[in-house]
Length: 228
Image 1 (cartoon, rainbow, N blue to C red):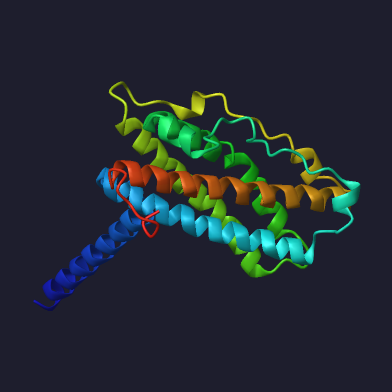
Image 2: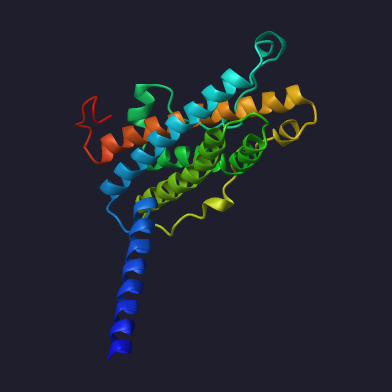
């Protein structure tokens, strides 16, 4: 009898742990089986939090590692995602179809998969960088993948055809690895600076455009400043 009770308790504990793991997985991944409206809400929350982290990482690097001489001695390069067409004004925003809008944002997000991996390695190995800075860099990389998965789900829901294989798309290549791995400290730090600067710019774009799309799709264009 005692053994049966112990076995029952063990099964109950196993079920509880399984339930908790399932709940955590659903909570952390916005592409779990949820409605389109809920998915937009989750993605906006993820993108907003990621932008805050990117701004923090950029600010810490700018204060502790950036050199003022760069402003006169170096020319800031274009971000590797600069060639991706995204709406530049309110008129273009209203004219762009939802699926085209999502496709543009997906282009931006996918283009950061590889660079963010290298940014994490560079930041975590940077002498003098805080633990918090390294952790935020890792979180940025992970959250970008979560956002990307959610964007792809939303895009496929707008299509009547078979789901797209986004890995086969031709995305802008990042060519900054050589500078990032340079033994010259100034070149190395400048490469990190540009990655931080460009990702902050791009995740702000993604966050803004997701809020625009949520306004369009979820609130039927009837949203105030607080919703946006």
